[in-house]
Image (cartoon, rainbow, N blue to C red; front, side, top):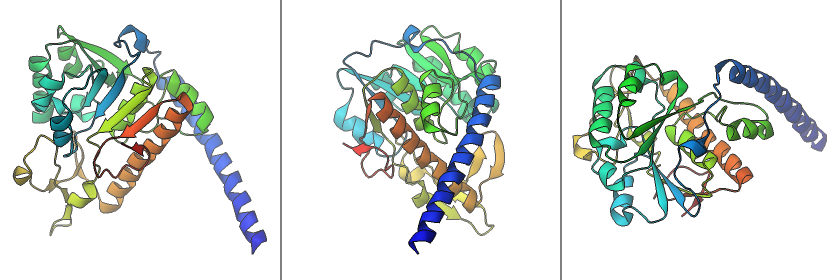
Length: 294
């Protein structure tokens, strides 16, 4: 029995090495063809020495966290996605903002138009907007680039899979990222690369599975509740694969996608440890299990 167990372990090690080898080759090719040499974060970031960074997700718990804490001294903030819809955007005045969903610049719908309009109308302080290089020629970015106080900084969202030690090199030079199935993975990676040594994560409830529903037509629906929404007003809607995609998820597909979200956090935890960065999950009742709880 022990011999069989040892043999299986050896098989797994060899299998994992072969998988990592081929994934690494593919990832390096993707970087060679898709990545742009980015400008240094030091050209655009605020002084990080002695400051921590708080990354703000959009989970329902964020409202209470912000009400209890407000804007903290010696802390810089990174908001994501549609945070600008809330009144907290103007009270927190985040130094950084990140949008990763390609639907935001590929689609032309109410969400994209409202997000752009709100960012342009409400941002009266200097703020860095992080967005992938693939968005650089979009009308969404061309309009925002005309804003007086919003500075656009492009990122290489090129996913690296393969040997962990090599992946950390490409992450550090901003040529690749771990798979960011959720924008918070990319936000944490960026905060690490800006040399923040202490990072707190808020609004990462990630309890979406509680809000799933399959209707009588076998269409998967979800009640997407953000911290600025009133729960009674949020209804079950078809769970589309993207803002620019009218195809809905199947049940197996959404749980596969969510598995990638949580794997991304564990990849970030390993990278943070390598860089000597402490990430604290300050989200009450969060399902994210990769970081120490505050």
